[in-house]
Image 1 (cartoon, rainbow, N blue to C red):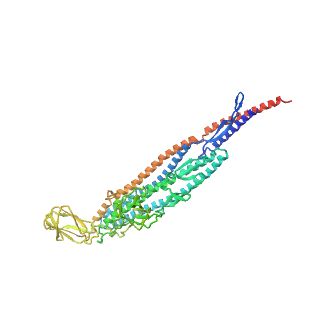
Image 2: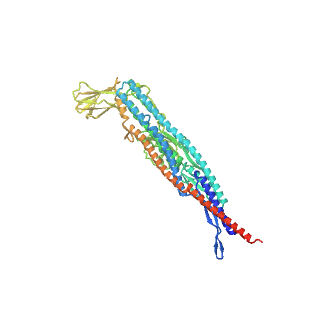
Image 3: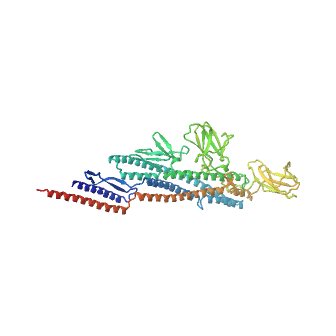
Length: 630
């Protein structure tokens, strides 16, 4: 009787545990990150008899969490990638909206400025047209400063977000370490049985951590999880945590980097971070924000160079030579705060067409100075020796070094980043716009040949004799003199360069024919330099003289748009991947109420049957007692 009773009680207890577990599943059907549990029931060891073995009922072996570590890791990875791409795309959209606006964007603002030059060329003496040009010049300069300021603001926002994300990473890491400790203690307390709810809690923290930074979670003996970030740096080791922290960039204190603090050291891991919100922020800054800042500065430099060069060769309404139209900031050179030597570096822009929009690291190595791309680390060839007389030359820059730099000292060179900060319109009076050319050419009315002279162009406005009258007289059909001196061979259409100007004479001048070049007095109606200014803005000046300013702006704005669209496509595609992996995880670990209802009915009936066994055992025992009564 006792065996039957014991067997019935074992079943009763086992099915009671199963019912409790089923009710736990049902209660947590909406709990985020909950993995359904199931009771594993096994037979008790059978008792041997002379004629065989007799079973003794059932035992609960364990309460098992229905969980697939591979599916969970895949879901975690896809969630990390999605968060990174979403952060990247949302910030890229901000740049695209800012630069690509059809009325206030970069292309539209530049085009209005070009059109204003054309209007001055159409009416060179018109003060209203000149005032419109100055207005558009100031608008362009202000828009460039606005763009530059907004990029700085976005950079500051990214710094603030990086700080916030790092704080959350540290909090989550502390939570994982605490749960590691509790899980280890729980397993030890129950003789190796897993504390399923604590495991779910830890997995939820790991899921949240993966949305901040890509992680690699490795389960250890004893139930703990070690968490690694970056290129294998340990964030959580059992119950111990290595904190992340933000540090100032060694070159630019306004820009934050991410470091891992380990006992006795702090390692910058910014370049190794991927995935999650941190990875998205760092990727956007390095791939979109910083290049946009450099490209915008490059456009400002090219604009100033093109306009200033041509404006200096013109003449204003008062007859004075034109000066610089725009002021622009210079090249930035930033010392590494860890430098130990006394080296100095200065850099200037020597060739606008050679500027690339990249930043550079100049490092003193055992073999001398080396230049490399700051983003990719690729070596950049340079010529020269770095002295004032023979500076290093690379990518449109001239670099001069001085002092005594130690091996390992580095300097960050930003050719265009700071150009817009000091940008300004230097012409305040509309009459000072140099729309005319300061020289004028003419053929003598008495010439008998068919020779014709061009209007002339200025090559060097600083030449002291630029506006001095010059007479070109043909001494034969093939030779001419200048101011009665010399004998120069004549080639029809060939360049004649004198006193910083250039003309061409074509046709067949006769002997004695004269041509005059002199000061363009009273040239208020002259529009030649205004036309040259309008043409210069359309001429190829960037990328080695192959790309015009307008094309460069179009490439920049279009590039931002393409990058934004690509980021959106990547985000949308990753969203599908994440939803699929999440569905796969739910299919494995999620609570199915229909299944739980069936289990509830099954275990209830089994519980009732076990209770009936106990009742039968009791009946048999009472019968036995009654039969033996006296």
